[in-house]
Length: 149
Image 1: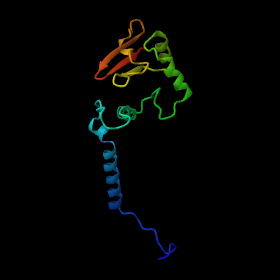
Image 2: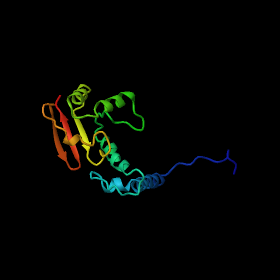
Image 3: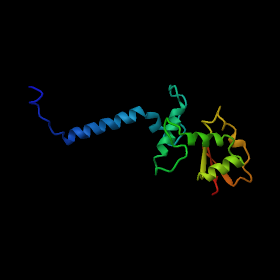
Image 4: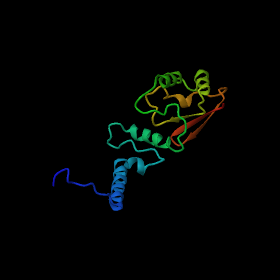
């Protein structure tokens, strides 16, 4: 049969269902650590060259729940504005960094204690917050800082 003689056929609902089921199974298989440990600290030994990527994936997934506005909600591109903001907060929590965050509308900062080793934020949890107009609360492996408006 020549190419011009071939006719387009309709796709059945059964074929659409099979394709959708296959896509769901493939998604689960490809993201099994995230699915198994959703809402928990993902084990670091996943034989992945970038084990922190699984933990970061949890934050990416969380950011889609209601799509809250995020200052650092970006993909592989870091806008210059974001880079400057991140640099200006390396000494968080201090007066300058809290005022900068407050100025741009940030009302909470989450410090994941499993991700800070070797970063400028490594000792943030031990820094004093008295007089800064912020509160902090330990939640599992994270510290949540609430910044008063």
